[in-house]
Amino acid sequence: MPQRRETPVFATQLGSLFGEDALLHLSRLDAETVDLVFADPPYNAGREAWDSFADSAAYLDWSARWMGEVGRILKPSGSLFVCGFSEVLADLKAVGLRALSSFGGPGANASCRWLVWHYRNKANLGRDWGRSHESILHLRREKFVLDVDAARVPYNAHTLRYPVHPQAESSRYGKKPYVWQPNPLGAKPRDVLEIPTLTNGMREKTLHPTQKPLELVRRLVAAASAPGDLVIDPFGGSGTTFVACELLSRRWIGCETDPGYQALIAERLSQPLATTPAESATPPDLAAEADRAETRRRAQRRKLR
Image 1 (cartoon, helix red, strand yellow):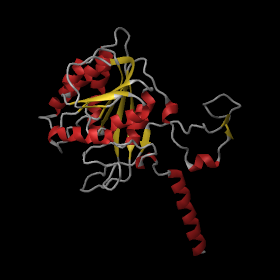
Image 2 (cartoon, rainbow, N blue to C red; image 1 turned 90 degrees about the horizontal axis):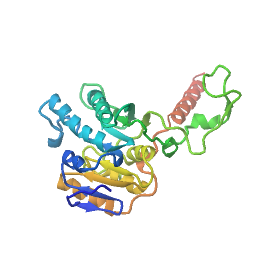
Image 3 (cartoon, rainbow, N blue to C red; image 1 turned 60 degrees about the horizontal axis):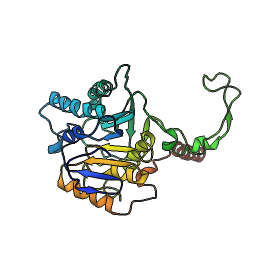
Image 4 (spheres, rainbow, N blue to C red; image 1 turned 180 degrees about the horizontal axis):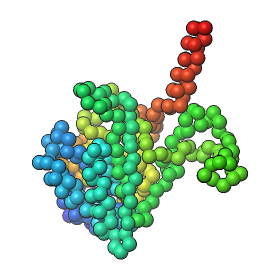
């Protein structure tokens, strides 16, 4: 790992947590030494003291500075995930692309995929549109690594009902004749990830107000890094990134300035880590639900005849 002068507030065999400001800590790291940065930064939503900025201009300026440091420390094969509301990330996308392109030398060309985290189990009060998603920017350097097999998900019931079928002659995809069969590792991950948000009563839920589900973070870390890679989370929060890294054998470095959240992270990492899927790991099977609904409708129609 890159050498640092400060002392961690907590450490495991794989990683270290520091109580230093994220921007200052990132500036201490050596250039092109990090494989992946997973960032769940303040959204400037004003709901917490650490989530409030003077105005949008101040927030964008701060974001440009920490993203600039990320662009400097990422390897040419590295990626940056940034979580946020879509209306916030719409302003940050161009900022992030500039940051990752600035340190790549001649011909460097960062790119971005816009991922959507969709959930249907969130209470929505008030008189505005109910929120059922957040977004994640996948910003990546020119030689980024993406292991889709590491993030595959179970096929839905409809696909498994017809597991083998030939490619149609009119299809633009695949060489014909071609017979599609399910991949034994599961379905290719899509850019919409349906994972329930954490709610009170779930075993995984902590007191952190913006905690992300372990399955969401695990899937992204697994796809964009390999065992032994170095993962940075500059906004440690509840420590979910570090839990995912421990489960996936990734080295990690994190920052968290709040002593209460430092203690929360230490507590989570000091306990035996779950080896079984989290509650958030099995989203509803939409096709199966649709099949059940159709069966109920047919039964009702038969009763009415």
